[in-house]
Amino acid sequence: MKGKIIAIHSSRGGTGKTTIATNLALNYANNGLNVALLDLDFRAPSLFSVFSKRIKTPVHWLNDFMVDRCTLEQSLIDASECFDTRGSLLLGLANPTLEAIRKVTGRSRSWEVSAAKKLFSIRKTLFDKKHIDYCIIDTSPGIQYSSINAVVSSDVAVVVVTLNPVDIEGVKKMLSEVYDEFEKKPWVLINKAYPQTRMWSSIKRAELAGQIEKVLEHPVIGVIPCYCDVLEPKNGTFLMMGNPNHPFFNDLQEVANKLEDM
Amino acid sequence: MALQGGPENSNAIDELSIKLLLVKLIDEVDKLNQKLDLIIEFDAKMLKIHKELLQGNPEQNSDYRTLKLEPDMMTLLSIPNSLRKTVIAIYKLQEATADDLSKETKRLRAVESASANQLVRLGFVNKKREGRKVYFCINASEISE
Image (cartoon, rainbow over all chains, first blue to last red; front, side, top):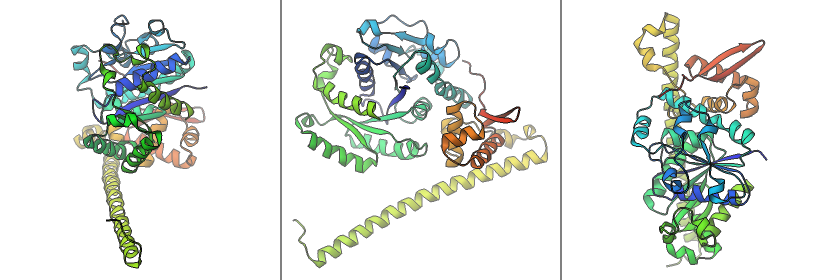
């Protein structure tokens, strides 16, 4: 099987993109698949904070790879042992220091062209050399160079949306102005749905998905209710490791299975 | 109150459907208009570049410099779909002949060849010959901090 790149995108921050990306990666790695999880949100990196308690500070960041200061392989950290995953779990982290973020702002368009070119070239290293099955990209929200580069170069894009009308309107606009123009057919994942949806049957959730599909004119891959305890410090972002029977995981597992079947 | 069946209500529903269809149609025509505007604007830029190229050294002309286009994703959003499809295929394949592009986009080789050559003229894409084959690749400057 040749690997697949999955971009996790949203129209704005706070939709749970990073939680989805991280747990999706852990899910696949726990199931014996080889996974690479990349943080392409260079302006507001979050994956390093998520993993910092379990891994050492990287020698090379993804930022270094983007400016040819190291190879992609050098910028990847093997976190398989930290999480005792059956498959390999490689992390490509964005540098969270102010200096690094400052450098990212104000890049020229020529630089962005080279960055896009680089992103299209990662397949060879990931799939042929590292035998990765899934590369999951946590993108920056909205319409920014790094997120569009990630979405356009990916095989599958998942747009995480909450039921907030402002968010839905933003996604609708983004889908028609960017995704349709690039002929990308993304999946919409409803996250943080009304708490009562936890009790809903799959039929009722499918009805809600249908309503959103009608509004956004794109297919919905799943409905994940708002589980406030996901953000409790004892659970952290690695909910799967501490509490694998949490309903969040059953919901995410369904999404993971659907993505695998594509 | 639920709608009762009957010819009057059926007429009202038909009328509503037609109205909704018309609203959708107007929306589509609007979108089409916007796309046509983009194509017209793009064509005007192309004509200007061609004119400058024919008139002599384009580097000395400030208009040409400001018209220099980069194949970055935001710029690609403003070019016609047919050209955008070819650029993305070149990004994917990194280096490709018109044949390779045709296989990737599932369009005719002649279409890809014309599209790629137009992209070369725009400065989006580089062209190099190796023996009898012509390869196209993205024109990107060296990356640096």
